[in-house]
Length: 472
Ligand SMILES: Cc1cc2nc3c(=O)[nH]c(=O)nc-3n(C[C@H](O)[C@H](O)[C@H](O)COP(=O)(O)OP(=O)(O)OC[C@H]3O[C@@H](n4cnc5c(N)ncnc54)[C@H](O)[C@@H]3O)c2cc1C
Figure 1 (cartoon, helix red, strand yellow):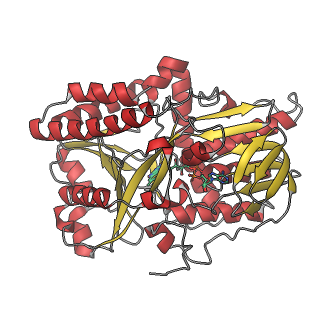
Figure 2 (spheres, helix red, strand yellow; figure 1 turned 180 degrees about the vertical axis):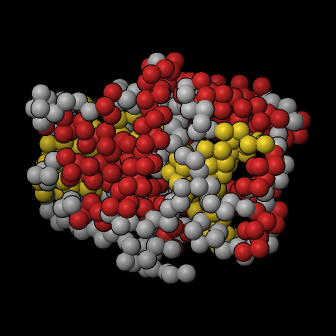
């Protein structure tokens, strides 16, 4: 394994540890006030993809990206590496709120986003350990099978029947030999990626296009035409705010987005004979449909990278380096991996880390433009952001390019009609209601999973409690 000089502020993730110095994108400091036509706050994938497409669409514009810590410091550099076609809203909700055609258009755009990511990685020669192995969503109990079947029926109703298929127990086990399997859903729409290599690779491509990336530079406040930072002021025409899980730390944005921690472990590389008995040969990412989400991938170098939700929400939307690890969560996630794949019991866990992802109050990711201030915000992916950031980056670029160009010569792009372009979510409740509601929902999810496991029946009561506490 290649080790690079890991910045002490970053989590000790597998991804950081296996990123080489040559793959890392170097940022530059700035010591006095600067000017840029477009300022992007946040060098995660939302900010970087936005800069990437903006540089293409507006080649004469000066673009500055700033990050309080550095490229890929946030969720983009430390996630589970599922570049999926998932969105937090689900087709049925998008249909209810925007109509069936909009739901179909959005899902189609997500499918096409995976092609676009592969295309850019190829064009920019970014090796992010990518494999399009799809996703296998296991059903390990009758309620889980009912949820999987419902999902497949829904996809079919929207015309995606060929993309999401039901696997019987035997076929599912051949792909992925999990315990207690009774069936699974399979879709080819997912890439397994190395998140840090992806994020730094995109950042290097952005720099090659002439974009300046500054770090560590923290935005302190945003006002029309200016971003005030701890290094000086940036005068600017457009501001793209891509701070996702960290949004609550910005002045006057405390209740816009809740930071919820997702936690991960990684194992040492498994021996070949163990992989032969487990499967996952084409590296499909995997999960099941329990309430407290788990997610995993077989990495390009033959490890398990495996994570889950359920870490506490911290009062006042606090974010601290100390929250990046959590011994209880590490044990729970490790135990969950052993339950799925008992043969990994003796395999060493080499890494444990986590980080905040962003949840808006309406649990729906969106891109919003306020042309009075020139501020565009993008994010709120609720843990499904790796590929959505690419779509959102293209939407951000189209919004600004459309604004800059003569509308007659530059017809509005199809992307701007997608139902993610719209008004901001309402704000979260003040504390302590936020803390009580989110943590109660977390406990309810764990109780629901335990009850379903013990009884084999759907826990309607606890399911209802979760929906009541955590949904819109
Ligand atoms: C452990 C974990 C696992 C996940 N697994 C998956 C997965 O497998 N698949 C999936 O689709 N999604 C996953 N997600 C979610 C996904 O990673 C995110 O949705 C996505 O990366 C968000 O990208 P972003 O650029 O919007 O935000 P981030 O990557 O969080 O970037 C925000 C950046 O803004 C910077 N910033 C914040 N405040 C300021 C400021 N004031 N001034 C300057 N800079 C600032 C931060 O330093 C950070 O670098 C996971 C998230 C976590 C935490």
